[in-house]
Image 1 (cartoon, rainbow, N blue to C red):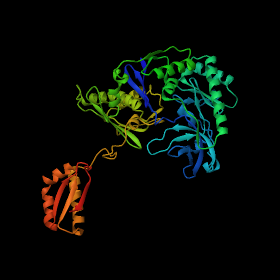
Image 2: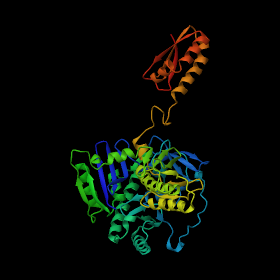
Image 3: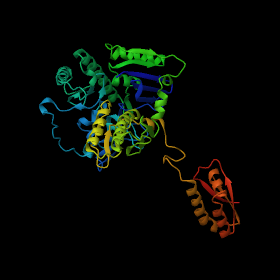
Image 4: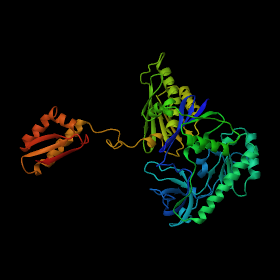
Length: 504
């Protein structure tokens, strides 16, 4: 699979697109005024302990207090998995792959007190109305290793499947690591020498010493360490040998990339091109069209079917429809073909849009069990290239698939869009007729208490047109009932649902 990185940089925004076979697969966006904070390390202050939720709110200097679970204060390995590609293998060889039974967690109030200073790292960006999710387990990602100075543990990425290679990497890290510290061996370390791992380890250990020094010199609340910018982070985390070239449209960014690769990946050779054409780089690669498509709720399939993607605060719903596709043989084959085609598009859209959390997929109902199994297997296969951790349940009797996808940062839709100021995020407005009948009800309430015999009704032009035409009889009925004259005034600046009754 041919892969490329296309980087667009301006003074206010950097966009990094990962292309697979010429099509955008992942998009990373960082704006100067809204830099991502995942991976940042803060010296925070506990402002509230919640025994009922076994969590605490911590002030780290952001608009909203960050959220710290009790498990993220203790030695729980799940707390660091968000910084590791594809998760890690926690079980050591002598564990026979089984997870040791953990003792019950102590109460949060025994671990933290209000006013206490604590060094924390952001695990999840603030999402919607929620503050950042933080952990006290510091994880410093390098090219080949993730350093965990507070945890005595060695783990290997699950994406490294060769057992001999796992054992080799584990032995190397065990021999060269500082006592009492932990490391996760990343997928990029597969096949690397002891020299490569040692260089990565020395850099990360030195970085931690600098963080510890700053922590001693400062007081809460403050930023202690800022993670890499989006370009460097993408290069560190997803740049592999199968990326054929990097194309960037900024000389400054080009020079930075060359320095970064020379420092952290000197043995790897990449084709780096400086794009200097007049046509914007994302237009030249056809990416703007694909990004715009990723913001729509309806996505068409090649056969003529389509999927509908609806994001809510709690979950994302995906609905599969045959649309214009009528098939060639029988209904079951038509449904199966549509569902299988939808599987590929859904996996692509989840990754491109960076949709996380709980996801419900409503496939078209399939009567045959073998067809349901085929669609489920196809979905698992399609998600294998997704670096975000996913968990998929079997198709239910109702034709639904429940799955989760790890969410660390906001989706593309929520990054690039905001709730509609007209409908206030509902996605719909009241019909004109509904608004007119609300006006009639309000007139019946207000007119009896209003002096004089004339009043004016201020409404949106579309509502005014309806009142003058189809619903004129309703106005006339009220005029006769209350012996008052009602004049209608169109106000172009009014919301469709907005109206006002005033005395003349």
